[in-house]
Amino acid sequence: MEKVLIYGAAGDRLLVFDEPDFPFVPMQVPGGTLEPGEDALTGAQREFYEETGLSGAAVWQSHGSYLSVRWDRDGQKHRYRRHVFSVTLAGTPQHEWIHFENHAFDGGPPIRFRLFFLPWKEARAQIGLAMDAPLFWPSLQSVFA
Image (tube, rainbow, N blue to C red; front, side, top):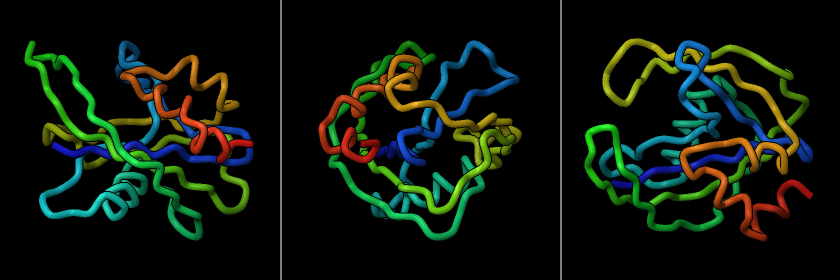
């Protein structure tokens, strides 16, 4: 299985989201699973739009990929490749907004996301699901410099 993580940059701030209807789910960055035959950049752009509603001029950069292992809710160990991208957002995005992810991974109803920006070092300390690891990579840190 292949996945993408997208680190949205607005100056030194990182775009993150939480799920108000599921407070036990940790803060995250946009991302998701590639569709069969989909290349990583196309999948990252699709997932970013689906999860944020943001489109338009932006600068995309690939930061490589890495193998990840995770224990899922089903008690099974899953291995997958995570492709890491940054996107530098054009203009001044809203400070905070609500967006609905209408393509839930399990086919369920839309999921409400509350999106907002945090200074990237603060976000690095707060995001979960092992999404903080790439923020220690020098190539990704340079995006927020």
